[in-house]
Length: 256
Image (cartoon, rainbow, N blue to C red; front, top):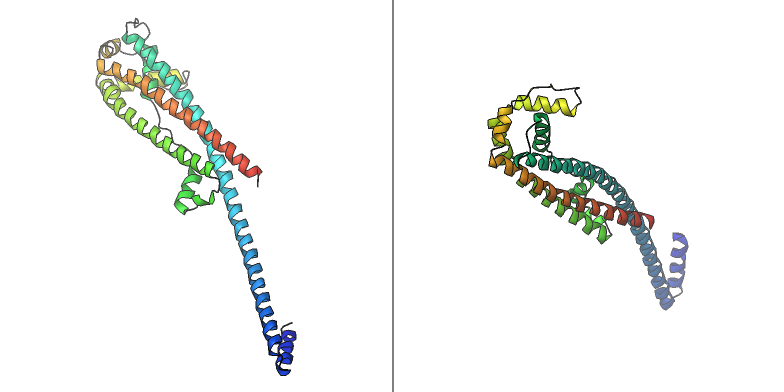
């Protein structure tokens, strides 16, 4: 093909048909430019397809993380709702309920003492941020939803930090000073395991009668009711956000 075009050029020049040669040369240039543009278009299409495939992979991984979050959130909501109920039952003793069952008081108090921080599943989001690939998420609603979810998660962590301070000051300090923690833990473990672990320890009535007179300790359970309720509302909001983002992701994937 190259030899064919070269022969045409040579023939035009030998016949002194310079104007036709210029038109021919211009045509060749146009053909070359068109070829380059087509090649660039093909290359851009291939690159766009690769980026879209990577985006789809990220979207599927995000959906997996969000679904795991919902499962985890539901577990924490159940646990913290149980802790709120226990804190209210302990407060009944502070308000005058007869101390006829030490095991009951120990169970509900321990159910508030023992709490865990929530950690969300956000490995894919962190990978997107750390790799600089967050811009790959072309749907702004999904991107904004992820950012808002992270902002709410930070609020939850701040609330947890505040409750940890209250717990250490109001609940743990008085309990460590006034109650035999070894007996407390053995008794609580025995109750929650239905006798499969721990020990059916006879608790010291005097210790619990004394701590029921401790205002600081009482206030710890008051704050537990309040702060667990705040954290539960934040978790509910996070769960709603997770579901909303999953809906957006499903729409985006269905449009692919």
